[in-house]
Amino acid sequence: MEATWQLIAERGSHSVRIADIARACGTSTGTVRYHFPGKNDVLAEALKHCVSQAFARQSAELRAIDDAHGRMLKLIDLQLPRPGQVRDEWSIRLQHWAEAALRPELRAAHNEYYDRWQDTVRRIARRGQRQGVFRADAERPGLTWGFYGDDHFPLGYGRRRDPTAAGPLGVGCDIKRQLL
Image (cartoon, rainbow, N blue to C red):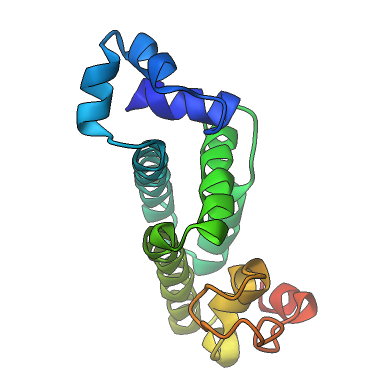
């Protein structure tokens, strides 16, 4: 999977052929098709692979930080797309995000990964409240969604499911900055 996700990150899923994947993996196209019947299966597995890598890396780094404010800042820092692996992971996420807007069958995995992100933010917010470094309303409804959420889903296929609903549940950039 390492060679496959790297190809997709560098060239884009629409430019990578099954033959390219087979060549990069040193195998036949038949073997690739046996494991991944279609290109969407390859993209879904590439997303799963890069999200697993990112989550493991983030978990290891965040566990080393007890202070919730420092932990939140580190989480944000870890999400910034820099050259190298993190940029490549973002490439995969963005490609999957774009495909999920068009292909409903990809949305469940997409939502699962964003749920994981929200859970991480919520856990850090609760820790910060216990430590007294975040305000009591740091976990008000919609904060994590607004932090990285409904305004991020213009087609309405996020958790709210209502494509006519607008905005991040009243959580604007000013509130996000105040909470940090």
